[in-house]
Image (cartoon, rainbow over all chains, first blue to last red; front, top):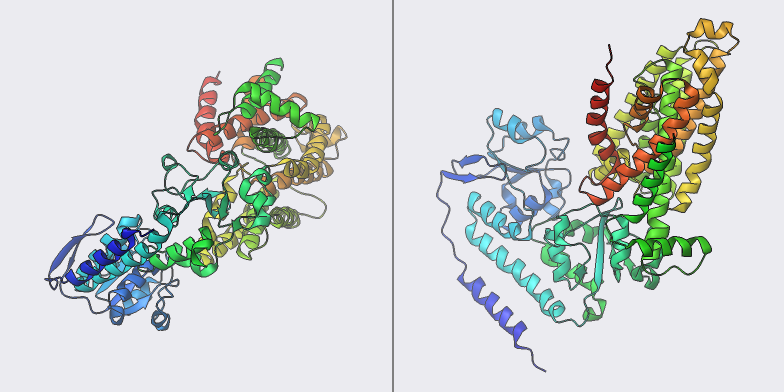
Length: 293
Length: 319
């Protein structure tokens, strides 16, 4: 049985890739950042510091890795950024080190408190936080605009969407979509279907046990999980789950379909950046191993 | 008293019957029957018998423990602000849990480590506060503050080093009854039971102590030994509770005061009544935590307990 859909998607994405050609950014440029601040970039930034791993990855994917002069403790991809000076983490940033590097732009997270002291020190700061699935694309465009890499931003988006489509083609028409509980933290916290990780879980061919009404990263009542009786449990090991009161009755625990997420996959899953296609592929291989034999 | 028992019964019934999953009353009763008779548990039975009921039992146990210990501490230190965490039990426990979590220890070992560090914290406080063979109340309180602060700082440093674990540690320190099963209840029971039993037996001596150290001594109460025994018993009970359910604030501080306002301050009534009321309150608070976005029982107790207590204070002013 020939299914025309996959070829169509791939053909369309090819068309999109060819059409991507954007104008250079005109400076001075004023944008509204994720803290709601009006930020004016006077000229194309040449000395950039990124203090969020997902932004670091996006900046490098835009071909602007050479602009980076410093990154936070957790930025580790692509490999070349590990050689850059470290300026601390989200909660313990080294403001002096940042200022000493003389950046012309610091891309911060909206969490943490970097924007204000850096602005006071006369350093241009922009807060960028991709959070939802769609944010990944809008923030890529925003960073592309700020860094004068708009054509590359279009290309990155095309590539990411193509990577995602390649997995979706396989998972979309799969016969059974296992009811899945994804634990991101043993308290237990899970992911709602509208969160960026929740979107990936759905695209990987799973049905999320968490209703959208509970929010993006809800703390869940264990009895809810026992009640919904998922066929697959992710993000926690079988022994832990067996030790929880009442969880031995869950289908996934009975059949041993309880899978811990490998460290490297966990990292890309937690970063709304250019590698989500890979993250989705890794997740899909766990949810539907039969598709990737 | 009868009213309190009724309230506690109501809390247990509601706590077992209500939750995020809707289960009709008949089915709840059926589940209890099947659980008691050891029959095969099917469907919602698991939720009622293995999740809700132990959770309610843990609520009663921990609420009662914290309230009794809080009342005993307030009595032995003659300080209305004393609560069960006064001597560093909570920060010791949190430090242990954080160390366990950052080292990636398996889940069942975390409470054990927390229990050990909680007891270490109390031991450190006692050593710092000692003056020869005496344990002056003020020195005990100050030593507790110091030990608590040092351990709290160590915990914070650890959390910042492993940021991805921050929420786990935070949730742990906020107090939560989520994964309390029968095994956990039975693990906490000996600590809580022994500690509280000792305190209830010492109620009369605590009454005498309210007249002041000198008077108590002249009445034949071994003041120093009493203080030490109360501290050790209460810390043991609290450490057991904290290690398994985290730091549930406010209950141990407030419940004894509520009881004093309504039933007077003789420890012979204060301690048992506090146990009843504390157990009841915590079950209700956990029910709210389970069925509303407030999410954790520690948050509920503090959010609702504060205003309620202020209202009682204003009403209780007859001066």
